[in-house]
Amino acid sequence: MKAVYVKEFGGVENLEIREIENPPRPKENEVLVAVKASALNRADILQRKGLYPAPKGFPERILGLEFAGEVAKIGENVTSFKIGDRVFGITAGGAQAEFLISDESLLVRIPDNLSWTEAAAIPEAFITAHDAIFTLGQLKKGEKLLIHAVGSGVGLGALQLAKAIDARVLGTSRTQEKLDKCKDFGLDDAILADENLSEIIKEKTDGKGVDVILDLVGAKYFQANLESLMLKGRLILVGLTGGAKAEFNLGIALSKRLKIIGTVLRSRSTEEKAEATEKFAKDVIPLFESSLIHPNIDRMFKLEEIQKAHEYLESNESFGKVVLEF
Image 1 (cartoon, rainbow, N blue to C red):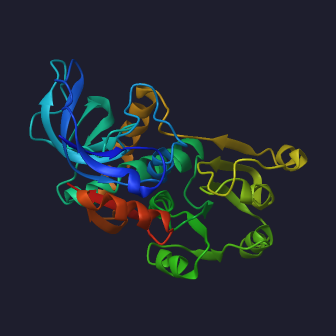
Image 2: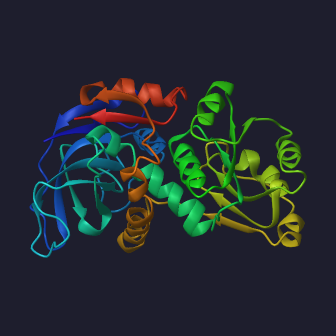
Image 3: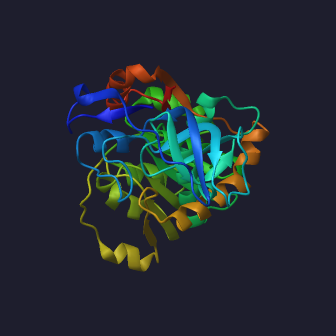
């Protein structure tokens, strides 16, 4: 089978399409999926550079964390799917190949109104967003959510999910163009990234602050986050593009009784991922079926254009997901 392969860790010139062995026949609760499309993530760039190794048991040099495809074979104990079913899901690596093996608990049926490409743009962004703002952040109707990097894949997913329950959403971005586009997705308050971030948040919330912050940036906004949260606020840390180390005033966290929660999806156990996938299937799939929310696709590339796809994602020009078509 063909797969995106990293010859040596480093630049995009080290990416190639290589013929490798097909996966073994699926066992017990495993499913063999014929991949039709796979989206790119920042983790792919980091892994390509040798900065984000794949978890044990997953390919070190074959990229890809999410996919959409067709069930090709099933293990003897699989009960949820049959050959020919359209499915999508997350994996800790190897999604950018023509076939992959997945546990059936990590797969979800693709709604009939979605194409392969649309489906591939959903799993990593929307499962991460749903788990972060609802399971961990406990966001409720009428509350205020602040999203850093709101124009990213996860940011746009969180924006749509929050608006679906009538939450008020504030979002930051480094470019006004992305903020303007986010308004079409329901963004209530667009904030150009600024050093006086906490003051801007207080101004827009009548001095009260926000209930939940989804931070896809990291250390850059940490102190401002604490200042921007209201009493019993929840800070959910997902990304580190703005740095991994920060100093902050513990007194603010104590006096406001804040919850600071770090999360990552890739390295979780199969059981934990299955739980997040099940909640996504229950709460989010109906929203796609009714077209209340939509996949966030920026650009599509053919498999053979993998180097161009990485260059584009790395340019930070993308708005939403970059998808590879097989």
